[in-house]
Length: 465
Image (cartoon, rainbow, N blue to C red; front, side):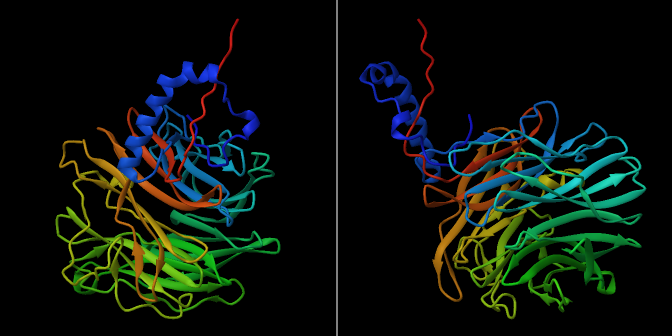
């Protein structure tokens, strides 16, 4: 069953006949009961979940989600395993491109093979154009000789990717992570991590005239997992920096602002605290309404069974940052003895990194207020309590956000969930939160859901003689 993000069918298309009302009464009551149950669980009338990958025998992993600036179009990109290496293969895209259009067919952005396998992909949307940046391992999938960062634009109105993709950069050094944003003119801005001599550097690439221009963001220390957003004429970048003073591992979340013409400024450290004990995970960044928010998870014990989910905030597009690091979904200041929001029991290996930690994602609405989604495993090893959570705020002050309490967006029943991504869309003029995530039942699939309110139920009928 597909998630319909647009307006319900017009009055002329609705079945209102009393003849059908009697025949459908019991079926409709069943749907209403399910809707009421969903309302009780997540605070909405009915939530519809869509399997966007629909590849039952092929693992679909690492989804990324993006909304158009007006919130009318949503796109999801992910990697399908080519059979040559887990998390490597094809780059696929699906979208719900606007009013009264459901989910379109899958679009193949990149076709993987044993000689060229996509590892990670990211998407941004402007109008009906999807911008996709992705990493390709070339040579062989298991032992690549060349790492490539590629870009392709796809039309969401024609559901096609016109022309060949563009090579942003390539080399024998490892490229494993990328993120993409787009400015209002439709120009893509890409960040990526490149490993030189075993150390990670963060770089920023922007398309200028007929070529890609690559600028260094961070080349000192070991840098990983960048995130990018565009707002106010700048590309805003956050990443995780690792140092080893006196052989003690030390992590910090850093931020820098990049101008497409003049390059990237100096970095600011955001995470604070004794990071040799409280270790931050990969940060996610969003910008808009004059604000920048960066969120990350923090392992608060050596066994990493307890986490805090926190954020840093700038009210002047990254010129300065509030001194307090605050927990998502609450008014509590981090490191001030506030209760942990999340506990996490996963023992997943590094090969299944998409199920480790909370891995938050963040998006801002037009007024600059955030929505955050993340995944948890409270199963204690029993495999029965996995969930995708979200929290959001629609108002606040210069130093706080009026969050709703953390709420379940989707819950796995004896299945593993992971890699939640969040966006903010629009359904009939009503703001809603969208999410894409992974669900492993017989194989990994990519699902989409929303907290939009669907207040009517429509059922297809077939009339026979």
